[in-house]
Image (cartoon, rainbow, N blue to C red; front, side, top):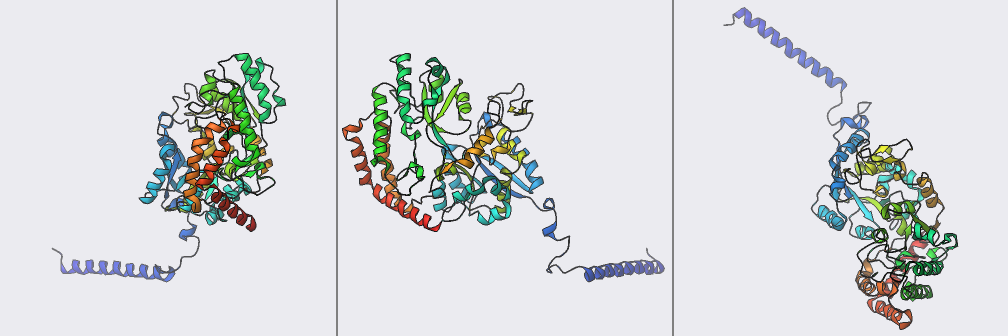
Length: 515
């Protein structure tokens, strides 16, 4: 029991503590602004290190299959976050979606308001993404957070704009390209073929003749680059203005007049050339139905050459794919047009909850060597090793089948020029590619993107016609003097091709007027 004297002592102590608490509180209020007052000084939340704030969380939707070659994706994600949490206070969720369902997956995620930020975009779906309001406008975001993007791309970035607005960031790669013939070196040497005499597609006739006669009746020198693609789809001397339905002749270097290529004399002459080749036995017989591409065909000894789009270092790439030396000979100049620039890009989902963080991450993809190398080649010591020659390659005991990160998609990882070269590439590949980008001839329509919304019905109908005729005509099976070209053109006109060309010309004229 507390005595009367003890009670007084306790009461006095309690009272003293209460008075001290009031005094401290009063002093605090006299020097600190109220909760709703504006904060100033070095302790302002805006000035505090980002690490003291809750990290933003973004989804990086990468175009890749979930397979043994991407089995270490969780490790890659962890390594990404070691970089991004430190540098931009952002946590990245790496999610892989296959090519076959990528667009569908993106649309489903957006309609379901699922977390989604970085989107892989190609020139095949770019305009439709914009017309469906799936991409965020990036101008202000890049101005705030994209200094590395601007520095890496220069004026090529502005070439992607639609109606003067930026929605995508193209990756650093072959922003300009040329078309080429690619030939087995063994047979080229065997028949003493002078590749320096090859200037355009017409110079190939005597070469194909020599190889055909030397290798025998059952050997067909020219094969397709890819299943379902015609010979002439890989010899392009025009600006396709996106879909190739209405083009600018001479790569758009000296004119802005949109024409139907299939109506031109140039097209007729090329069709006649490949028909002559087919009749002479220079082109593989089953070119319209084969499910194989150049790598498996040449690897099996079934052909000698193929046409394809190319870039600096392409011969080394083809050599790896075929497993034997391949020579790449240019058939056209190096050209930059909107299609080449926008072939591979990144955009930000219109549903992004963290657009600033997403842009900061995108900027790192164009400016941070550690992040780019990680995305391209994986974790050093586990997925790759830098050898004494300066090239990256698998560590001892690891190969393409046992490594858990072998995407081989450096072209999609922002600025691949920041990453080390893989063994087998030319030591100066990045310098060559940069030089080609800087010195390429440029179409007068570089930066123009056709919006097909007003003619989507006609476009579908014309593409249906093209699917019926292109392979037959452009692989040489059909005789151009039989009237099939006229029939082809007439069918396209019935489907509405003239309306498409008129719409494309009107949009191009309006775009040019604003330049």
